[in-house]
Picture: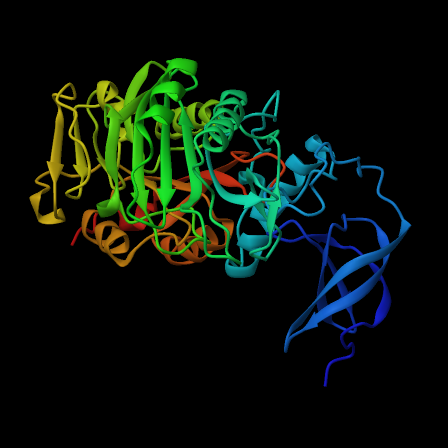
Length: 445
């Protein structure tokens, strides 16, 4: 039987921050996760959920406030689920993101040199950094509104703009909503089941002043031509417009097979450190252009490349890593799938579907992993190829730590650089350098 129950009020000292931005305290060895509490604070908390090995709570009263607590800058912060750490001083949050990486490794790795984890690479201006918004749309009191969902909920929170979105994204969203009202194109109403636009996706190019809009609909209904024409007149930077179908009104995404290009070209162009990337509406591309440049530049510099090296890009997509490094190596292998684009300018690139097509010893393998971490195919590649170095780009400290537990059987952990791709959230990226242990260098399957 647990030492607490729902609705209990209990005084707690916050020990550290969790991976979701909550404060973590302990009561009779039970971990309690408290929303909006900061490390070092003492709070009176109300228990909201109790599980076998943990509990959740919310702050009822702050008894001792952290000097790192600040006032949130967003009027809907307490309700919206987009940000988790606006109440925390930004420079202090960067320190916490390093600590999140450290604590994740501590859970899975018994012994390692903690000094390999560097300070978090932050932003000079951590506002308006997102180059893409995917937001729900609803008809409320006779007017269309875009918004966000409340934390851990499907409750719609209308907003007028978002301070972490690119300013042009906000402007385009407002224009679309006005035009929807003007031409009687309605956002979906879950209560009446009326309306057909469930969400809007707007992506902008930070460097080239291009924009792409996707109307996500739940019925096969065409967007009026007059709305599209006026939208383009107001925003000539919009060079790509899609219509996409999704029957689930609570989802902002869509099945790639359901999309239809209704205006312009299929892609917009973004530039990272002088490298152009053609990005489709349903294609993954880093949401923070400024930090993405730092992220890939770090991956390149940590590899310490030279013209004699042969490398493997194991996660290609739009091939950001490949474009950064191909000029600095002798040959680059790129694992691709049917949806990945091929860049004919990379004359030393070899696109492959399986590892057996690699005929060389590999010096460096680059991983830019998803939140689930490395796949079984990735571990197979490491066991077969035994590259001298691994550069592991991660967006999830927990799966990074789990993967490192396996990798460190044959590799040495040399350096981890956390990077803040998403300010005012609990998310943290990192780049890890590993080198093959001397005892394994002569062994190759």
